[in-house]
Length: 303
Image (cartoon, rainbow, N blue to C red; front, side, top):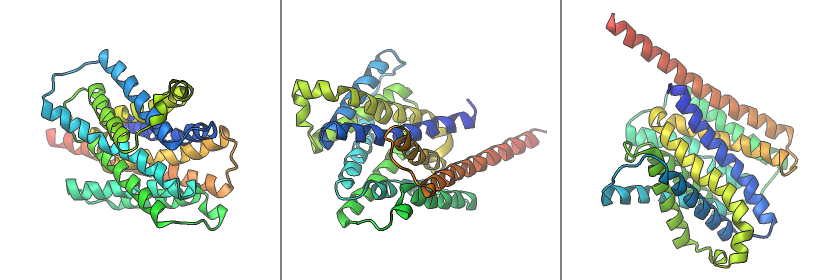
């Protein structure tokens, strides 16, 4: 696969996350609680990925490696818990802005752990994305919104854990088959959610059957596909560009809220969506130029 193929996979993973808010709102409208929604998402997602793992390539793993992969799934579970907690005291537009800070946190992680200082092109791309996120969230069109320190704290924690998961998906046990690795990631995330916020409602069969369709879609889009796509693509493009590509989740969330939930989207929000898409394109153009230059230098060195 070419580098842009891997970048496309990571982009699709971000789009999957963007679709989650629509299904979560539909589940809330049906009367389900936050713990039931989160629990069903992780439960169904883990079941789906393990069914896929049965028919996929696997390798024998030592207990320490299994433990490492399970622990690496903790940020996946924490992100859902922290983000939904922030929604308890923050307007949804503000909460997603805090989650969206993973865009620059990813480049910061890359700088700290990989010693790769962000290029000017990447800084410009991130600046476009952050400005676009402010417009797309509806803050400017909606006027003043109440902000609480609790919601701010949970929102920033969700951004940090989301970035951590993206980072780990591309760096932990790279030689482990993709599906097997994702299955262990999601299992770690499910255990985390069940321990910290037990979804006791799911113990009642009627409730479990009613929420199952929502859990299926949330599990597929939020638990199965993103870890799978990130695990394939992230090692080839790095967490810095990876977090830029996953920022596609915000415009997807805005578009689906308009089409599916019939929510009114202002012109300033659409402007923000265009800015975010522009930032993603700018980040990819930088990637393409770098790869072209590297290929040229490689060819020159062989002559």
